[in-house]
Image 1 (cartoon, helix red, strand yellow):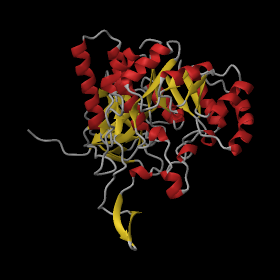
Image 2 (spheres, one colour):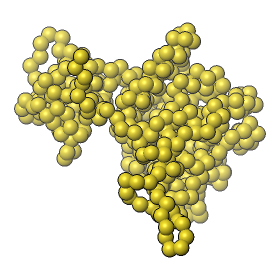
Image 3 (spheres, rainbow, N blue to C red):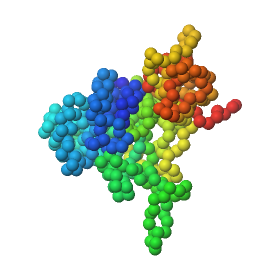
Image 4 (cartoon, rainbow, N blue to C red):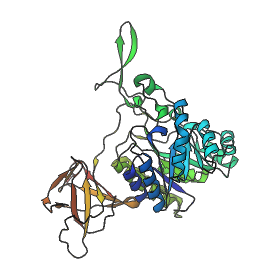
Length: 426
């Protein structure tokens, strides 16, 4: 992957950060709850933030810290002290939405690199030039921007870096400017604490003499606010040609399995885009990778969003679609206390932390970096600490650690999934 093209992965905690980088990301974005639009599904504090930034740098990657809330007076009071501490951690850029925060950063930390958050809703070339003049190095374009508009912005501000979301959950409101959560639950989406009422099920019921919407938890009803997920993997060549250089994956609150699969698939896709493949062959490769995203992940159905100037899709029937595959484990590094099974020449021992259930009879796939998929047949594995032969393992109580003998090496942070439906016998 060339240096000027960046795959940017989410990091909701340190393990997800490490997984994203292991699967091909060139940069990660992360933040602490107080100033980030992830107030709940966010395990970082200043200490772990420093660890994450250092880990990224040690692995030749960049780390961007989110300061993308819409600040109130209470936040401004705490911000100078936080900026002072953050400056010592040496992040590669700050992701900011609020012009007041930008001005405070410029005053107290003039050499800081600023990326304008998608929450700032930059949708045109005049706005892009305005922010560039204000000292912003990169624009994270609003999700509502079309391909033609990206081209126009790139031509009007050729020295400005452009970043665009290519995969993940979509807010049904205008780039996240939603007030439903605050109204219904008191939790503000614009302070990173969205309760996601757009994913709830609603039913129209008579209340008194009027018709009002009542929030219910029953099988009937409609998910009429539930946006499909964004998936632009087949549009990567067009986005690159339009001037986008950073391709962003949404999902700091998603699982480590999501982190691995989506990052690995998009990293492989960007490799294909820069490999000189003929257009027809590239199109087929990207189509195949999209099918993997459809088949191997839980999602809400996929949409192109607003990129092609069309209406973004809604999933009105259910909150998400079923998936035939389930995440069941992640590879971990060998430890001195681990049991070492006997092996034959050419065989390798890999260790896994079990998530959910893993049965020896399961049809499994092991996913390595750049979406390199192994399909081994495993009939027995071993407790990693006692050496006890096992035919099943479960993820409860922190996850059991097991040893598996394979014909190929499996690096730490690789993920394992199992097929939930019986194979069709032909």
